[in-house]
Length: 220
View (cartoon, rainbow, N blue to C red):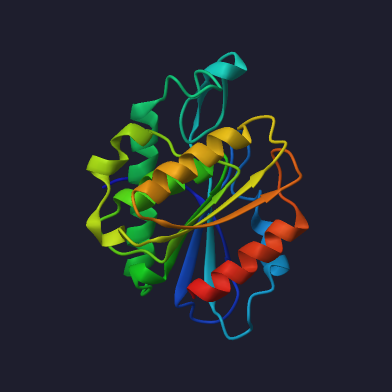
């Protein structure tokens, strides 16, 4: 049986009937976005379980092989060489978390995958390929990994999946052009993208948090 990653959980009400599995970025951990939940301004009627997993610890090439929490290795920032093995390993971990939420009584179509930077890349990669209908994908300051394989690997169950993409115009880690290219690939495949860009770097701003809360309100 696959061992699932450790998680932090925040519930906005008793007996949650919806879930957000929210993945952190490189070098952070599950606590990174935990404080954002109260700021989302979700309607009181919604009982949502936010699940914040810790990524495995692994060496990261661009950081001189330093061991840190990472969903996959990053060899170079230009994305020309991608860690296929690491990405797919993390995909299996997140699919395990989806299965756990379903076993706890939450329908898969009430589960949103979310993530920032590396976490957003895994959310996109996993959500597009998942075999059961999900609620949506929230991709923050990120890009579409292994993009060349999406058309053949994506699953019909999530063909019309709503996707929220948010990016900083001045992102120094993942340039806005790379994010826009990812958006174009997804739109060409027929996905409905809600797109927001803000005058910020590789970060999160208050306007973005408000947009996330509004989007989740429509999804749930």
